[in-house]
Length: 306
Image (cartoon, rainbow, N blue to C red; front, side, top):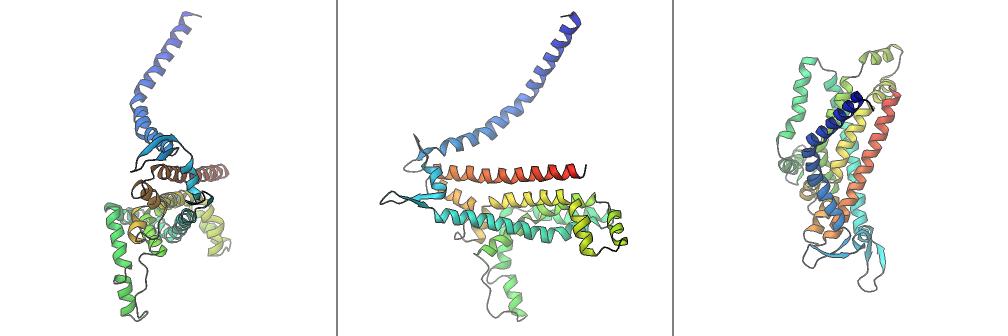
């Protein structure tokens, strides 16, 4: 090997070593703050619950079995854990409908902002981000005041004679869905607006020039071009809705549990940390599956549009 090649190889080796040294603090933070706690949760899911919380260091798969099955205390037979399955179903169902409603309300909002003059768009976006200025707990209490039996909605409806008695909304699945819609709606509007801002509206005008109806323009031109924003917004709403804790706790009244509440229950009153850990990993797997769907569709859309 020539002297020049040896010098180049040594310089490259030094450069790689320097890069690793510069990246070391970030890698250590990721290792201890990200991977470390997750590894602990995975380990706990394969242990037995302690008598007063905590865990016993004895290997067991009972926690994973308990995610979907329950053991009879008399004859030790296994059957489906109806309560857990109902909570899984409610979490997915409410998250899905929250995402759909967020799209229904968010799409025209984003379209309205994207079609305003450039000098006023910043003001409209500023208004959309105002709810983020307040704490999630305060926002949830605010929607609670709106929909409770003596709240603004029922009072107004009774004043104008639409109803004679208050409608029971609070402490129902509807209340949870409305609360999550209110909290996560901006997360749908912002990605949609980012996609619509780049939309070439000359294509929309061309569609009208070719005698396309409004519905055809929406279905054939606008929706395909803003699909990345729709997918991103749906993921941003669906994932936090799936693991929501505060909103279902306050608006569901502790009766209509979602996955986040079930996990908290196992680590708290239930004192079954392994089951709580296995439920947490299950939630993580569902979230990862949703993200994989997003990556796949986003990649396919990008290829189609070059």
